[in-house]
Length: 85
Image (cartoon, rainbow, N blue to C red; front, side, top):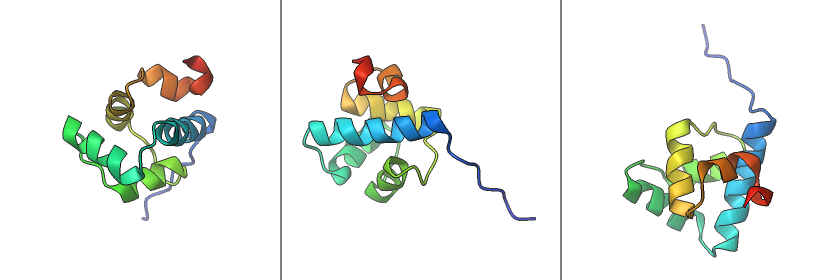
């Protein structure tokens, strides 16, 4: 039996968009942010990050925390959107 793809809901889509917004506001390329996340200890390629930003890949809690740390924001900001800053 093939694994069922899980739909990404509104919170996941908002989080993906917020990651992209914050990354571009900070002048980071996807490769640079992925390298920061990897340096924190959560291996991530720029392809993985691109898929997260396009809401084509789920962002698990460990990746969410590492992305927040790399972007120097609270994980809550990623969940609630840039207006939460």
